[in-house]
Image 1 (cartoon, rainbow, N blue to C red):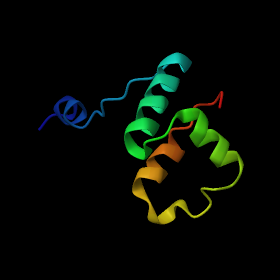
Image 2: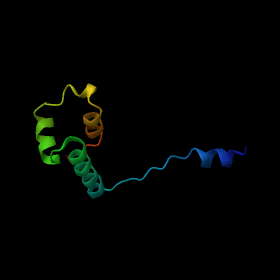
Image 3: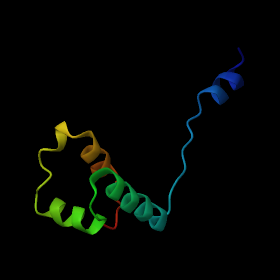
Length: 70
């Protein structure tokens, strides 16, 4: 198999989001994963309520998605 065929076969599909898109995705993910608003999530996050997130995959997903402006 040629190098170009290998390269095209394994290229990840990555889309860079602008800040507005990142916030919309974050808000939708928080709502669908945790059933709360993004603002409520951030309030709880800043209060330290999510320190034991290792056992909750939905929470970990949301924590990794926090946009830079939050």
